[in-house]
Length: 79
Length: 555
Figure 1: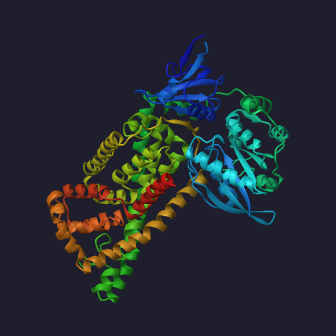
Figure 2 (figure 1 turned 90 degrees about the vertical axis):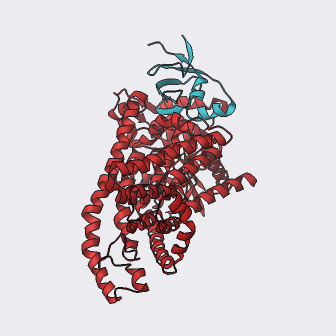
Figure 3 (figure 1 turned 60 degrees about the vertical axis):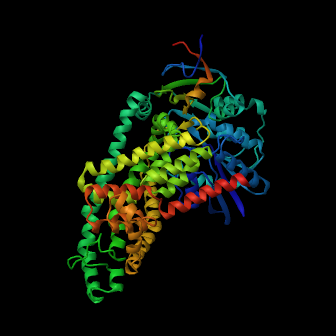
């Protein structure tokens, strides 16, 4: 088992969110979009030059900025 | 009066259901945040008139954005009065996330109805939801609907009066695990293969495939707009004006004696004994020809393509691809949506900047649009005039504006204090636009243009005549000669276009025609007309937004 941030994950990889760092505001915002500890998440893609990261949570596709993505820690699922 | 509030997450189709219930047509699109301020309409339930309110989308009742704050305030005000009904609209394809808000609503102990919208989509995405079971759990009516086709709306209307306070109870700390249990009980997923739209969805957001796709989409959009616009003009509107309207106007011209002030105001100057629709400058000739035969075709073409892109769900993906670039200009990628709307008309574009989170972003986006984004009315005229020089002319005009857009953005980002927040938004699924809804939206926007623009165009042409008759334009022309002739290299008469450009850019571009400008001068004039000042309608909206913003800070 390996814990990485969303930024370090590779497109196509899946895992379970184990921690969301950062302030109360950003955690709450993440939660409202369905990004919570314990939830399964899949990285779809990453844009060039520290651009946004695209993930899928449940049936929702979400774009999040590089900075936010660094703060979301995922336990990678083995293939 | 009884109030019915439509509440739900962003982009769950509240506005479509609102239109269904009230018959009031509001713009709905496939991206979050189309409704920033609420819309009101009316309907009858059990013979009684009730007010229906389309509340801006909220993910949670613990607000984290301006739209959410508006939603919560409206909810709390309405909850204080007896007899109001709260309709929670839920995206059935995203049950778990949407129920977060539902449970918060239940906790408020308000008369509730739950709508499972996008019901049709659950069927082909392999989601099976037992609505009856959910109704038993929540003890309030749970109604599957499909707003866009109208399925289930009758059922919703007939059960509105059954709204009641839910007896469902849960610990707030346990909200999400409680939702997990509910979802497990009522929802079954069947395995299925990825659909074509989903594959396309992934491809268009991967940088390597996404950037070429974006270039192709934008190129095609541009080509289609021009093709439709030119065809409508060349095959329908110009022949109509030339063959039907011109003979009629020639008769009127003869009746009026072929000259004189009244003749010139109505018909304009005859050129070689004939009416030239662009140059004559009569209210009944140029005043009608410009909006109907030169601008309207492009407005229709542009809004058709834009509405298609909006409803398909492509625009937020384009926003993500452009995010890195746009951050350098101080706005995040999704600000591309107000910009694109601004190409149609700067007024709705300026209004759409309200979806951006911070004041700084809204200011940068509105400024960039007002200065460097020409509206379709003006673009149509530039197509008509500079288009004859082909890509050379058009390329320089739009290329210059694009460079100004970039440089101005870089400067504003440098000068203004603060940072632009990172993107953090839901990307809607691709949907095939529903044709009747598309046509309705196209009609609303086209009608909006006719209603708002045509009177200004007529007024503009009238003012041109008066200003010329009183020789005011000549006077201003002489005053402004150092700038207009000296710096810009345009003839003195071009100042008339700059004066009218305050009112309507399309009329202004039309006024350049009789001046016999060279391609070089035409390009300069087109660029200057875009940038020097927004048209009066945009200016009013921008002032209202700025003043409103300042008032918000003070009060």
